[in-house]
Image (cartoon, rainbow, N blue to C red; front, side, top):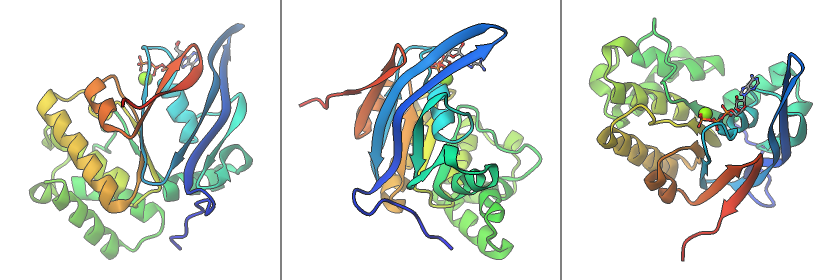
Length: 238
Ligand SMILES: Nc1ncnc2c1ncn2[C@@H]1O[C@H](COP(=O)(O)OP(=O)(O)OP(=O)(O)O)[C@@H](O)[C@H]1O
Ligand SMILES: [Mg+2]
């Protein structure tokens, strides 16, 4: 039941083709994206940078099937999101994607262990196996002694590490992160990133990370800049 639909020809896990997005509200049209085109290979990490308001979060929401596009297409693990029913899109999200947000988005009423178990339970993993896998990953991110703590009983860095564990526990093809360390200090931020990159290697996940942090962007395999609605690749430094 853990099959992936990776395109065997090129190992592409995520592909955006001429994605455009215009918000039209109350007679006001805001053209945010005009041409976002890229493809991401398995295990590759990608930084998306750009000025505030350039449309980075909008693009990430579209890539994750959380928002609709006005034109173009997005394929996740070989499935075009807009061709799927809501239920199928939900399944692709659960099976192929992980999400990390700037503010952890952990469920406040649940413990760290329960939060990390959640994506596994949603996909039908039995509770015993879910607890085992979630515990192993929480230990891996240094939270083995915090399993029973609720988010309000964790530090900021611990919450983000818990969110990293939650995003990766399903071993997704791709993790989408919107400023995943944006509210952490430098030391905590470096620790969370180091951890994400280690797990990326171990699990073979691809990463798309929106960040303002130049040091972090430099550690990704590729960087794309969003400007005036168009996404362009920054040539790798030689
Ligand atoms: N629901 C909406 N309706 C209308 N306009 C919107 C909506 N959501 C976002 N926008 C506009 O789209 C543009 C891009 O917003 P977005 O949040 O994607 O930017 P961003 O690059 O993530 O910025 P930041 O770096 O500040 O997070 C902004 O000008 C914003 O005002
Ligand atoms: Mg944003």
